[in-house]
Image 1 (tube, rainbow, N blue to C red):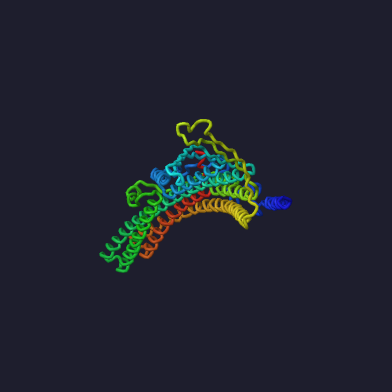
Image 2 (image 1 turned 90 degrees about the vertical axis):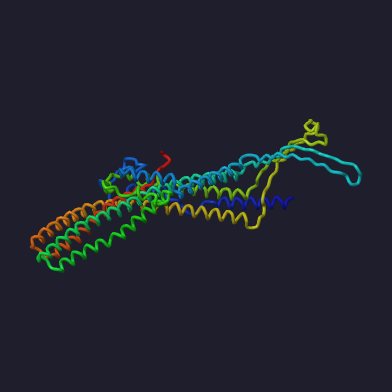
Length: 467
């Protein structure tokens, strides 16, 4: 008996040592260490006070884009997979919470046998009853496991919101890239028309002896060089339509007509004020940061549950029912049986299983903490970079617009002077090249503003739970 008490005391001391060492080595980045302002220069493009729009894509004022986003949110298969992961996590949480309740089984049986030692002697026994087993959660092992699964379920919900945020951003980005390719094709076609007119003028001047064959060849050369850009741009358009089909969960070529560039379409260049808020607000809003935080809670609770495995577990088992050889009187009180049996189970030796489980749980907690810290730093970096990029590409559009206007003026002047025989045809060729280049650059620059805006909204996150 003395040896048993010594063993129990030693085991209790060892358990206490593991509990004392349960504190993780890594530390989370707390809110006090988050900067109060962004490193990027804050100008008239950004606001701090106004709340971020949840349906920010509506500000592009494009009903087709809105339809594409709504279709993606409804039919995208990646989003549906994320929803099923949430359902799985919820089911796992319910399983863990089931440990709070007793397990009750209904048993019924009938036994009929013949005694071989006594010829003709038979016996029969019928029974029906309930069996119950209930773990009394004195230590908290069941509670910690349920807490861990609940935190994992909440993390899966945040991950779903993260997939939703990324899906919206990717859909808008693909739509902008598609419209950009279509606009670039329209620019090429417009320049082709202008260059064809110049080629005809040059041919007419050659026919009257006012221009050389070299001028005609050069005019045709630039025309065909521009025409050669059409297939590559049409390929890009087809690729973006195919990508949009995957995002919307539809056969891509069914979207071709709907996504055709309307004749009256305008470019997507929304110069809008964006509410960025302070860094701490952004972190509270981003689904990936919230998911990482919930994952820490889940892993910490699991460490507690693994530590609880070192401590005794308490159960109450019971039976209640009726058994009789006479079925007509089966439920008489004389045939009733019952039993209540409290018990304790304490694992005092399992090799390295318990220590290995704790070490694994603690390593997972350390991993979750470091993942959270990395997610916070990445979130701050993404927002700051997106703000800087949005401001710079907005300024780039202004400069590119001026360059295009001057290229257009140069082209008109060069062609007019060439018609009058005052300049060489090389001036016209150079003017046409620069016009095509700067007009294409302007379309790309405007697209960059829209894409930078999408990246900024994606980096800022969205609290979908507010809807």
